[in-house]
Image 1 (cartoon, one colour):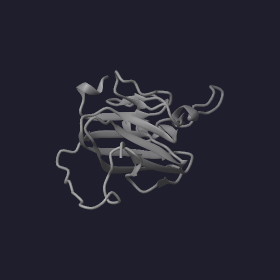
Image 2 (spheres, one colour; image 1 turned 135 degrees about the vertical axis):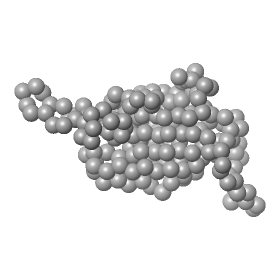
Image 3 (cartoon, one colour; image 1 turned 60 degrees about the vertical axis):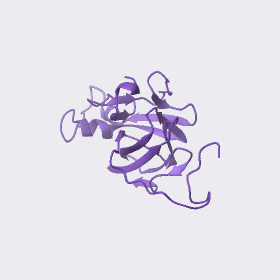
Image 4 (cartoon, one colour; image 1 turned 45 degrees about the vertical axis):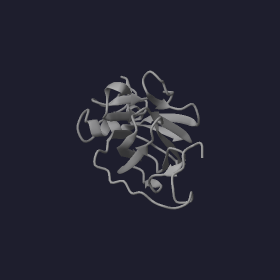
Length: 189
């Protein structure tokens, strides 16, 4: 599915079954110009599917794989995730402001995720979750003309379960007058 036909994106990260109405992003999915999204070839990306890890051999008693409703979209998004170690996710979109909704967490481990946009601008404080909990965060990112939306993931135990990106049509823009220490600078400086 190409980005040229969409304006609202819903990504499900990880090796598990993709939730309905989401685009699946596997750990090894390198950016593809034709698709318009994927991880850039920097960093290391692992993935886990906790639903698959809960399935036991036939001769042992199985635990409930889908607590909270069989096949629920929410549970699928929580079960599977990518572990992006200094990795950048890229999405080709037109210039403008975009609202980003993230789901981050892990059933078995504490998470600590740092997310930066563009040339390294921190867009949220470090996101920490204890084992068995997930957090939903929202932020807005501006994409300049001729650029792509780039989100860099790092931290001591980074995770990304799901991400939804949509145009932020009514975003307030604040213009700051000052020298280069108070302004965003283009990549060329």
